[in-house]
Image 1: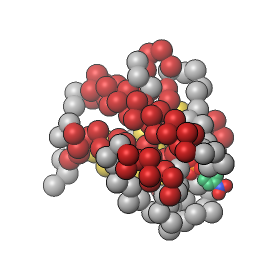
Image 2 (image 1 turned 45 degrees about the horizontal axis):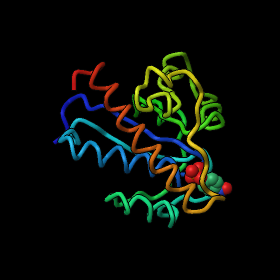
Image 3 (image 1 turned 120 degrees about the vertical axis):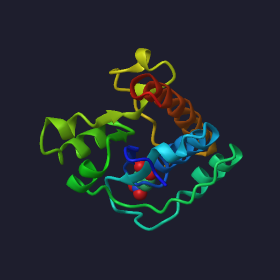
Image 4 (image 1 turned 180 degrees about the vertical axis):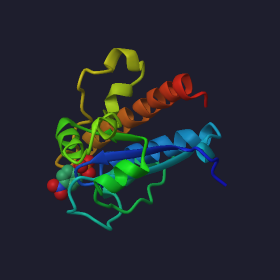
Length: 169
Ligand code: 4NP
């Protein structure tokens, strides 16, 4: 059973088949390894609906698997107000996702839930507020997908470290 107050995290990219499901999978994997999975609700989505219902990109799944991570997520579209009400952190992959998501915010409280995921990379104090994106690998080769995988694993660690400091996990 989930505790009364889980931390609710939504990863957001454009298509929800490359970057955000890779981030979701990496973060879930980390939570499992730290026995923290019951403290969280984690999901991902895309600002566009091109791939709704699909499994993640075949190369995204391949490089996740190289790292011991099985991706089973099916793509879904960002649901605006409903997702603002469901989640505490909306972690977007790039500036364009940021603009799309924030355009659905009803107020400053909604807006304050939206962060660039890479603000939390490694030592989050160093990257915070610098506006660094997770590069879109969709038109790239396996090296671009591996780079994304490395980024999302590193940044998941940074985000969890941040939560440990601020949420007494
Ligand atoms: P993602 O990558 O936003 O990381 O899932 C993309 C997936 C699909 C498309 C673009 C980017 N697309 O144009 O279909």
